Amino acid sequence: MIQTAMKTKGAVNHSSLSTINDHKLQRTFSAQNLLSLNQPIVNRPAANQGKPVQPHRPMAANTAGHPQTSSYTGSKNRQPQPAGHPASIIPGTQADAAAPAPLNSQRPMPRLVRQIQKGQKTTLAPDGSLGCIRACFGWNTSNPQCDVDVSAFLLGADGKTLGDSWFVFYGQTASPDGSCMFLPGGAVDREIIQVDFKRLNGGVKKIVFVLTINDAFAKRLHFGMLKDAYVRILQGQEELASFQMADYYENVISMMIGEIYEYKGTWKFNAVGNGVAKDLAGLCAFYGVQVDG
Image (cartoon, rainbow, N blue to C red; front, side, top):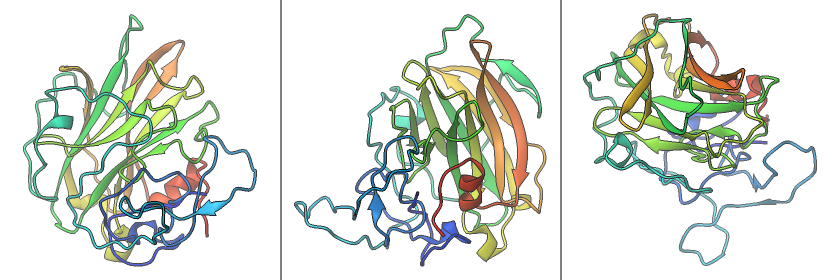
């Protein structure tokens, strides 16, 4: 099962994954802590094996091994520290820039030089030389309550995650193989997912990038309140592909903005731009991540 630290305050259940209070994380959360930080955290193998495990609670950094229950009163602009399996952060990019602007300040769009349209696909490295890329995301909102999160689901050939821990976002910042990492944005992009294809588990055939409005059900928020949403795929300073959304639906709270998938030995980018009326818990269930409740 998976439990997750989310950005907002209050207890969490299956119907509202987005109500866990914000906190600067002391450690990478395993894929077992998606629903509640006040429930036991379970260490499981990377892939679901259906075996019982022994729960334990997270340790605060200064407790010298003594258990401590998490209590969240943190700020919105937390900077999660990549943990677990380290991956390199490319110098001089948004990932190592100064702290980003306040949560919902308006930002100008970066210049997108290799745009494709919704439904189009493009090969990222025709010569098979794809290395470490960054999927960089941005958006603006017309409603200051719209708090958007980026997630990446690493899927096998069956369209499901390899296991509960193959789901990367700000509360679980690294995949088990260290190939995929969540990074805070900088002055341009709001959030970044970095993928090192040289380290990527061979069982991963697709990586789906999702934008989700946090606490959307409770606050009656939707994608009709967003604008200027984009993803751009960078390798070094080169843009390999980009997609700017044009459709913003009022009945959508999560958007599969794009995906990278393997096709005949090469990796391609698909500009998806399709949304669903599911919160993060619903998306986890859809992609095969076990959610308690």
